[in-house]
Image (tube, rainbow, N blue to C red; front, top):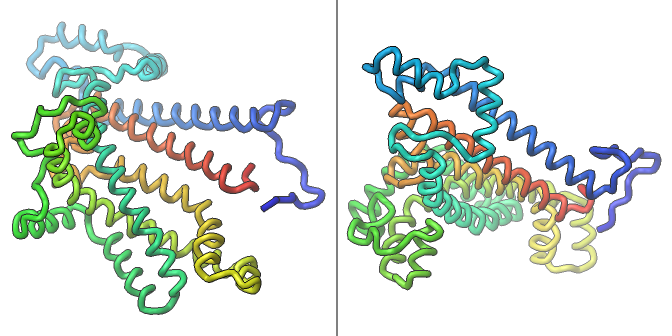
Length: 355
């Protein structure tokens, strides 16, 4: 559908006047991403300086002599002025150097590369469940507005959005694992399957299929079903509520009345036209929900002993390993920035007015 700006409306100035529109847009997005990432680094840097944890003591121990303490302080650059410390911190992060973990003695980036695929696998399956079930539920609730399907879906969404995730996970383990035995227990694999598949992508479902190990695949899927369902229910509740609200707004528009007057089928009006227009803002909702799952699965990973990024950050925080905590925080923030950028690009593709 073509978009015509209001008569007399002045064109919006680009990032650099005189450049082509697409180049202005690209430069504007890059500048926005760079500033946001710089702000993220500033926040994590200040957190590392404000928290009551001495990184020098964490590295050398509280019984180290004073001269050893001072040498480590100089080695970490903590004797420099604050602005010089920040510049050095930014330079190291841009080089991929998040420091060394006190807990594992490995580079933090190496640890994150090892644990992040587990969180990615869990969050991806959860968001797929949330989208594939939540969007149709929201559409049905909007179409049946005020009737019993709408009330049932709203109650399910309210429960999923209100019940604590950790409690839901514990009840799921008690019922489906301990009592019924329908799913595998905590962890990512049974112990006798560990080490059978060489990690290539870090995603066990993918690696086991590539290696031709169907038993490992089904065992990993059995461990993944329950935590993914718990997080998927939480995501489903939010996505269905937002889909319902967006669909109600679209179904009240004049173009819907026109489409029905032209004799289009109700299914085409709802699923093609109304949902097609609602998908523009819904893309942002789904992207942010996915980012929340990548960042907010800490409690679920703890309940299910899932060796992901949330579990790693929590364990590092409890052991005063600030390099690991801040490195994980930067990765989570970068994921959010990337998802926001992706949703903005998709928004421009789906909505001609945004271009």
